[in-house]
Image (cartoon, rainbow, N blue to C red):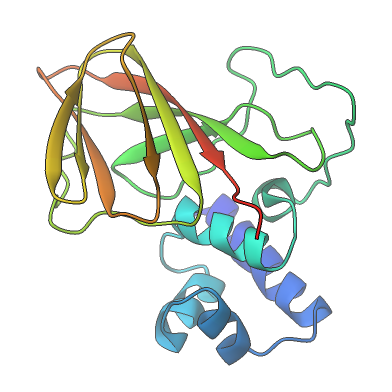
Amino acid sequence: MDIKLKQIAERLSGLRDALDLSEEDCATACEISLKQYQEYESGEVDIPVSFLYRFSSVYNIELTTLLTGDNPRMQHYSITRKGTGPIVARRKEYQYQSINESFINKAAQPFLVTVSPENKIDQSNGYRHAGQEFNLVLEGRLQIVLNGKSLILDEGDSIWFDSSLPHCMTALNEREAKFLAMIFKIPE
């Protein structure tokens, strides 16, 4: 059993309880099935960062609170030293490392994402989440399938897109790829 996954699931359940919401309320608000929501709360299945981001946005909770149990406090600036941000994703295809968990009321959520060349993903089912996303390739070569269109990005290339469109990334040339991902909230 993955302890971190179980802890995230427990925080998810605890926050839902503290907000006096039912599992059905949360599933509906996050646009997933009740069964899927219950699986996330069980701590037995991987919880996609896109779901955690949606939950935190819908209920106006800092993503950091769900991921680490800590509440961000920094208001003027926040520094994350190389290699110190918590690993937050629960998907085998990608490793997400939060690179700013302590700044409060962020307009965007930054991640350092590593894509292993061994992990091939089903490009017909992309991930979706609210907002907009900016990706800057730091190392390697990356294929992004965005709404069915295949795009190739090399080191130094970037893309900004509507993240409600299905999207997925694959490392190319049998080499790991790393990119900076910034997920932006869109004011309602």
